[in-house]
Length: 400
Image 1 (cartoon, rainbow, N blue to C red):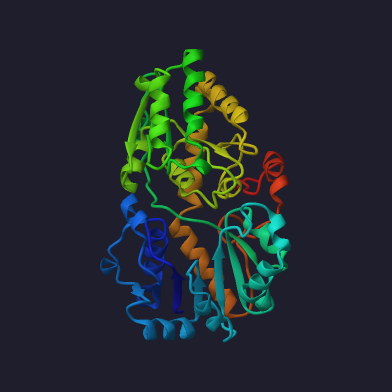
Image 2: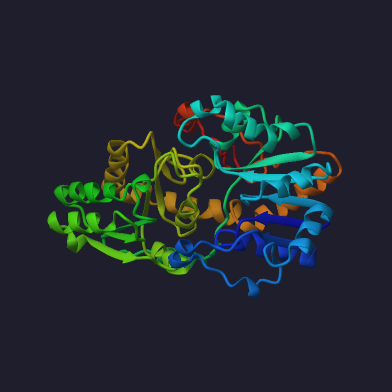
């Protein structure tokens, strides 16, 4: 089987999956990059030397060869390309095609009533609803958006981003976190409004007032970093904080490995949130806004992490305070989080499921996985998602 993945550019969030696909298929796998990476992303440490990845071809350097591969490959997976005509040219052939998308209406599903928007969605998605094409939903809110416009009926499946997998022996995992009584909390991301870095300062004020032993690691940079640092200094909290600035992805993981709790405070504008994968793989107890796309797929509340509703700071603080007060009773969630990524939500497993699923697609049979990547994506409306998670969630454990 020849398999081609077409997306804007390759980055550290896509390389693990592509490496796994290349390991399975060899030269029958190709990643087509449609544009150079933006300078802002390169400055954040996302830059990749595509010349060292033998499976990468650049559309802007070899357009004819890439277009030929898009039409002739057995299966093609389209991500975000800025070149919709590439997907259209493939769909017109009627050949087996996969698409992957984050949610359409991050700012609210009311936008689905826009006539202009619906016309665009018709030509991109609805028009081909009966063809041999499926949608991989990179986030738990994606399926609801596509169901709203009548696209991909019965052909919406769970997907996501698959970061570098790190595995540990029993001894390594047991000794990975500091055991001196101080709880280390990590926050990683761009310092921008949707990610709420200011919540961390509010939390630190409360933790200090309650007399807990804690230390906060904040990795990343952005427009709000100066004001956050100033607030920390003004509140006399500097002894509890370390600011790392822009941090290379591997270094982010090194820091996470030494932390007990990963705090992810992004709001509904966060399509997936790959740092949730990374925090879980690092054995952190996750405290995540349920509005984040990754949360309902990855986290079983109270078992392998914790979620709070509707960007609610007060609920988030309650969860962290309970962890601090009863740490020994809750620390096992970090181990369960690690096992979720090690056993299910990783690039190697996802690649095997993707190829198995694709083989079925070539035969005209859609065969979903039982759980995890490529299982059926329930179309749960955003307003009901948190309560769905409290009632058992979208991700079941193997024993359920």
